[in-house]
Amino acid sequence: DNIFYNMPRSAININDGFGGGNVISSNLLFNTCRESGDHGPINTWDRQPFLWDASNKFGYDSPPTSVTTNFIVANYGASQGIDNDDGSSFYHIINNIMCGEGLKADYGGHDSVFSDNLVIVSPYDGQNCINVNHFKPHHQHQFTNNVCAILSCRGKECDDLIGFTYASCSETAKFPVLINNTYYTKNGNASLTCADNTYDIDTLQKKWRYELGSSAHSLPDDEQLISWIFERVHHLRKA
Image (cartoon, rainbow, N blue to C red):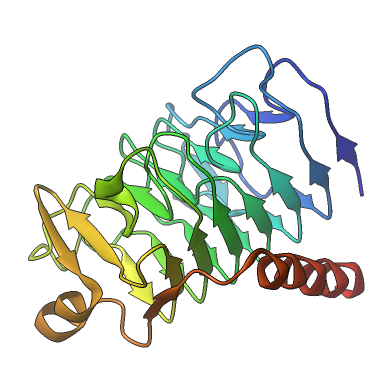
């Protein structure tokens, strides 16, 4: 239950994932990154693996860090509401409101969950709803049950582009899990770039069975967007 604002860099920074198990919940963050860029109000790195003992069983899988029921505005130099950079892994980002770009996870990041979030994308660098790298098979990220509205982009070519994955669409064991998402774009279409190729949501569903249950619609008016935010805020306060 904290308020973070008017900050030169990120409000919350996790330098590595040692131990995991952090909880970031029920916070309001805005006006961060006022003297910097290429990160978010919540910024994470995870360059170093740690071997740890969980119930007498050694392993490298840390307990997930939970980021939930936050209201995050990525303005000034901020990009995503939560910038999971440089191999950040095991993040459960659930039931947040984000004004900024959506899930980013790169440079070997894996096993994160991005679910039940409301993302309202304003122009930054065109990563839009999702931008993820690939990792070892069966350690892909999950992007499910989100609402993502792309208000505008840096160019016409990305107005309907929901995001990028560096895995090819045919690499199903490395490809992110995409299910039951709702996208709102300028033209009512949704497409995703897989490696060097871009496909619309119908092709993703029919050819590879990605984005099952997902749909694309034209942008609602400002009043509708604001009502969604108010509804979510009311829900977060009750959570």
